[in-house]
Image (cartoon, rainbow, N blue to C red; front, side, top):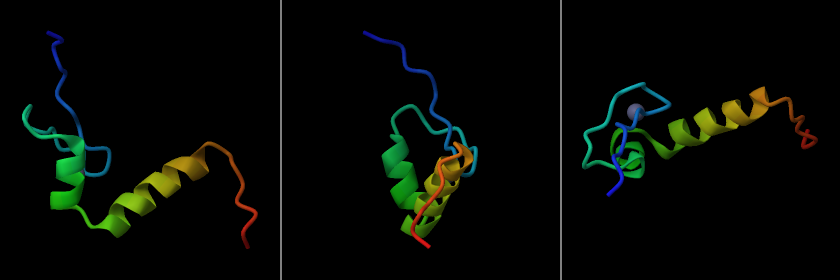
Amino acid sequence: MTFQLPTTCPICQETLAPDRSLDDHLVGSHTHREVVSHFVSEYDLTGEQSVAD
Ligand SMILES: [Zn+2]
């Protein structure tokens, strides 16, 4: 049995209850748009340039 560290939401920094998955939290507490824009901005910070302009 692996001990699971509490999951923290990368968007609102809320610590999730141990029986809640991050996916459940994202779906229940954030809009799809929030989730997408969060992960898109993370991606941009890696230095990758979008060529789709
Ligand atoms: Zn959150």
